[in-house]
Image (cartoon, rainbow, N blue to C red):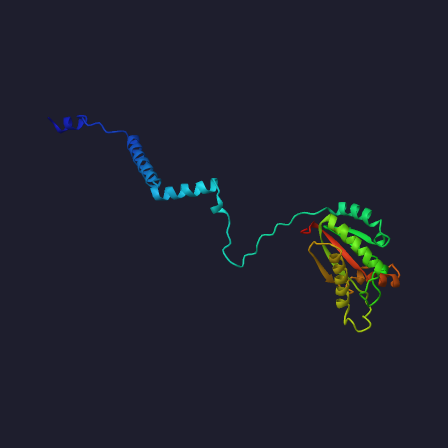
Length: 237
């Protein structure tokens, strides 16, 4: 056989196509990828039990899941009950106070979340004093019965005119206004009002809030007053 015959003899071994090699590589990579995913998805039984236990507590809450204080200094939660609305209070008080000769002259001022009863200053206090007339004491006693019916939280606020107190009993208008508030608060308590309330003194700090168009003498009279403030929450009867 000549060399030329050897070159022309075809190769008996058949080579695979090129795409088949690439396909085999891709298949091997995919197999490796799925093996890796399977190994990562394997969950230890202890961890799985812990997860299922937590889920069970969330879906079925018990007393153990309720928040508990972690310190002795935690602020306790206070539930505030709503009281009568200011609009309803205005209607009720207007009707109840109209029957009393003194309280009928009280000024009712509805504000956002509060109702202010300004007791008539001309029937309450003289300048620099905290004493009340018998007529004023009777009127405040009647007011106590009305406040017991509505049951809203109240606050007794005393005021004074800008003049310095005379007579040497009180050194400042702050003390005088607080004494007036306490005087009214004591009468309310003695008349049978059992709700919890505060008594505060504003001194003459509210004098500048009065309408300047009102004559000065009348503004001074209006400053010697006590306000009973009703809030739109229950008063803990």
